[in-house]
View (cartoon, rainbow, N blue to C red):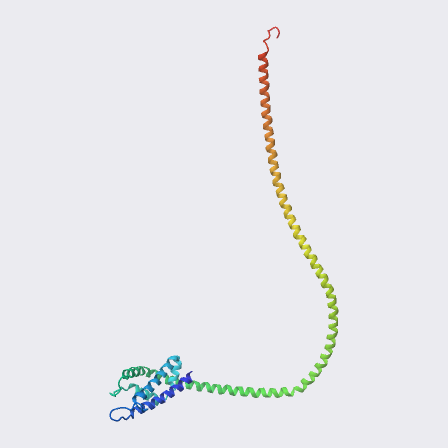
Length: 287
């Protein structure tokens, strides 16, 4: 982004230098400017304003450090020409209509001139910093070259040791053949073990089924135990109720017996009184 801004700034400054120089050497006849001429104040001024507006828009999109760095890249002659142009006043009486607009934009450019000068200095510092970075990169490049040479030497050593590696490769191939024979034997043993394992799997499956059945029976046993406990609790409650009922019946029986005894004594007394009232009184001698 900074390089694009630098290129645009350089192109804009060159065109503005040409426009300013052309406006100073402007000739007119009969007091009327040729509006179609490239050096006319209207065409040249519009071009300059377009360039200045493009420059302003680009600077507004840049960061502060980028703007300062860009300022350092502006040549001194160009910066001086811009400052002189910005400080000058438009005194041509023939320019009308857009004069106020030009004055306003020139005033804004005058406000930015110091920023441009500072950017030029910052860009100069950045160029120096880039030079330092380039020197550092050259130093790193030299180190990488040395490493490359060392790597090439190591490659030569590797090529020299390739023959021994080939010999080792042949030995390894012979060993691989032996291992293949052993692998065939192991594969045969594995098949035998798989046959045995199938029988073992059937046995394991049967054991698992038995475990499932035992688990189901345990669940049933637990359910029966729960039901038995519930039944026992209910039976104990019924026994308590029965004992209470028996006690109540016994109490009622005792109460009934007492009542019957009382009623019997009362009946006997009543009978005796009735008998005495019916019998005549006896003489003392008879007694």
